[in-house]
Image (cartoon, rainbow, N blue to C red; front, side):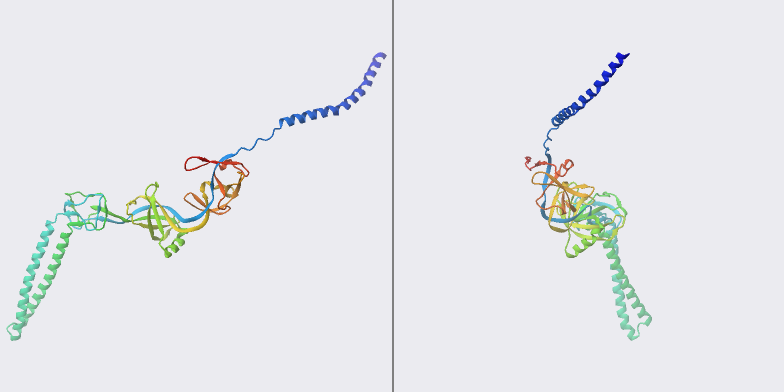
Amino acid sequence: MKQTVTHKRKDRGRSPRKIYHFLITLPVIIAVLFQASCKKNSADQKAPPPQTAIPVMAATAVEKDVPVELRAIGNVEAYTTVSVKSQVGGYLEKINFIEGHDVKEGDLLFIIDPRIYEAELKQAKANLAKDIAQLENARLIFERDKILIKSGNVSQEEYDQASANAAVLANAVEADKALVENAKLQLSYCYIHAPITGRTGSILINKGNLIKANDTTPMVIINQIQPINVNFAVPAQYLNEIKKRMEQDKLSVEAGTLQGAGSVETGALTFIDNAVDSTTGTIRLKGTFDNKDKILWPGDFVNVVLKLSTRPRVVVVPSQAIVTGQNGKFVFVIKKDLTVEMRDITSDYEINGEVVIDKGLSSGEQVVTDGQLRLVTGSRISIKNVSPEGQEQK
């Protein structure tokens, strides 16, 4: 038992020495581990890769005069439309034109069988001749009685009767003349002429049919297309400016097909409606065009451009350069070192794919027109515009 106790005391005496040595070597161990860790971290940290240039399309802001225009969809209507109807009834004897072709004012279109109206004219002329003969005889009797009444050979009653007969027959002759004129007029209605110069539509009644006077269905419809009108509407907020411009001079109006192909007709604004459409907030206008080449056709829809004025020397960029963010509109401006900066701009007018810049951009500055989604301020770019020849430009 004594030996065992002694052994335990010896072990206890060694423990402080071990702890002392451990405490002495601990800072060394920590320093070594820290140095190793630093070497590892320095080995793991590599130099950041160089920033990759982002390919974009670019354009240059330019300064030029820009027309102020209002654009709308218009509807073409004939300058004049006439529904040709017959004023007399009868058998349709002849059609003297080809449907869908142009006719001139006064051209013969239809002939209705005129024989019955010729007969009525002859009868009216015969009645006129009979009454003229009777009038002449009555006037001779009256002139004779005027002499005889002075000598007492004719009574006053006979004289008055002769005077009345002459007056009645004179009125009958005037009535007969009116009947003759009416018969001539009815006969002339058998020959239907074009009331205007224009383009005929489909023939709505064929040869051989019986025509009713003033029937509800027209025989043919003629549209005058030279000149021609185009109806369109613009926001009522421009009404005062339009009226002011019209007082100074005629306003030019252009009309072209919706497909954008073909020529564009130029005319003048000739009509402003007398009331604003309260349901749409627009005012209806009308432009008149010479339509020499017959490009505009009744019933067709066209693109209309109303030119109000010109804004001189304003800065414009392609509309693709404008980006709309939470704080409004901005563009990416390209610097000389081929980095970009985001710049707020103010714009209120766009025409033909270009936007007028009121504030925020100067003429000659380059802006990004495609590739903005990958950009932030400071991004490096490479310009990849394509020239008209199809070659890339850097």
